[in-house]
Image 1 (tube, rainbow, N blue to C red):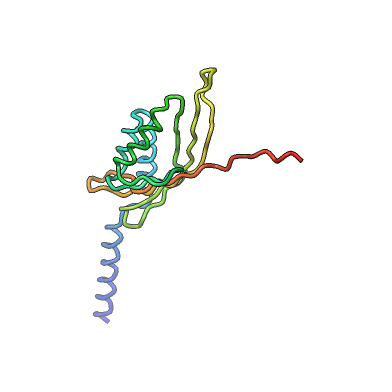
Image 2: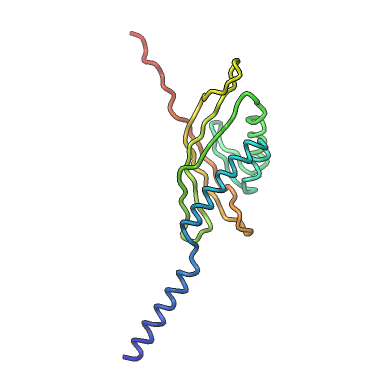
Length: 161
């Protein structure tokens, strides 16, 4: 009886230690949401440099023209995108999911592009969804490992008979 009790106590202690070492899932999801919002803010303030600063060196960015691999390639594409001062790219995360280890996660969100009209007003000219896969860095920060987006379908008027 004593051995059985000692075994149960040891098993319970092991479970407590294992759970104590596991990251708080809600805190990890909150950190991912915050990282994605900070990413959007950095891109809005600093353009391509702000955008690129959130990517891992060997990250992948999937876009309409293919895939860019590595920060140099991503910077080259996004420098052209941000050079057009009559266009703006905005986004916001709506959900975050984190691995139990707390080392990897992803955010899902909505993006919108806006164009500056001749009247000086910004109007939406495109929108869609994205998923961004994040990896926790040794310093505790989050960097983008993979970024993928797609555009909402464009409403096409029916053909005239």
